[in-house]
Image (cartoon, rainbow, N blue to C red; front, side, top):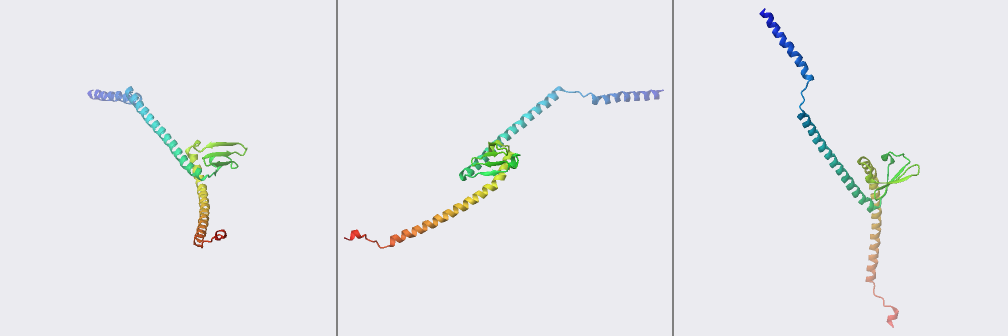
Length: 183
């Protein structure tokens, strides 16, 4: 009998332990301090990440302003206007966009409407595309301007040299006394 009792005793604790083990995952003891700590940590992370986004936005604005100012120095000095592809602005191909030397964009739509926008009004993606599109045009205009100026400077140097030669000839000529002074 003892053996039956011992088997009963061993089976009873196992049966009693089994329901507790199954119930334990369903009943998780929650420490409110742990939840609050986790939430506070997440809030701190949220604040830090938000500040980084703010700083990046500020840097973006500064970089766009610096790019605008540097490009404007070039375009205003040379008085260059360039065309900008309308696809950059998701406009129909029969629209025309001209970037003026002050970097304002004149947008003429196919329906005849015209609007003026500032270079800095656009997001970085559009500004990047504008710069990629106008840079080759600006380089071509600069090359033409250099050729023109080189040609004009060469002409002026040649003319100056010829006039200097004439001036030297005048100095080497014997002085001619006017007829009025001989009498």
